[in-house]
Image 1 (cartoon, rainbow, N blue to C red):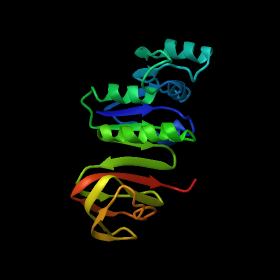
Image 2 (image 1 turned 90 degrees about the vertical axis):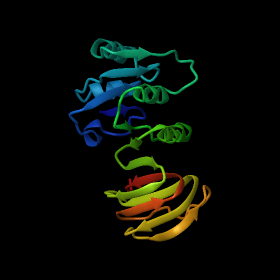
Image 3 (image 1 turned 60 degrees about the horizontal axis):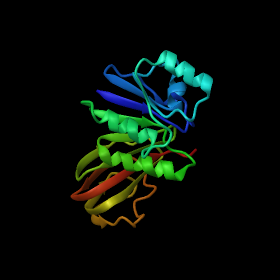
Image 4 (image 1 turned 30 degrees about the horizontal axis):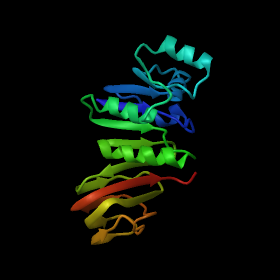
Length: 202
């Protein structure tokens, strides 16, 4: 099952980022619920404190979404975190978070950290992010740029067939060496945790 989470900020078009899959489960997060409903998509689950919607919109959400988890506005975790924690309870193949990238750098950073929790990607109209454990990966990059960042110190990094290649190097968490690469290729590393960011120019 592919779990698709739609969250704020609503700086993306649902119709541009969403493609229907047979085995999918859709979660709307706070204002993401209205974003889906306006695109004639009824989520399987709605989650949030709903402080980002109007009273009229909230009434619409309640009337349209049968499965709704409502939280108090004063809480320890973000709505998106609560949605991911709920998603992790399912037998999932992949979790895609649509949205979650915006001008609030603190929220964006928090959402990037959620990628550590499983096979999760963060997507909007210009960006895709995900994390990789040690191994060998063939990456088909459809974006203009692809960047690699060590979230934990990476050992034995090799990049082949990308515009800029590397052979068996160590990449520290503070090192921006692998920013703004291009093309597709093979990535391999032996230790650490890698953040991959695919991005187009806005």
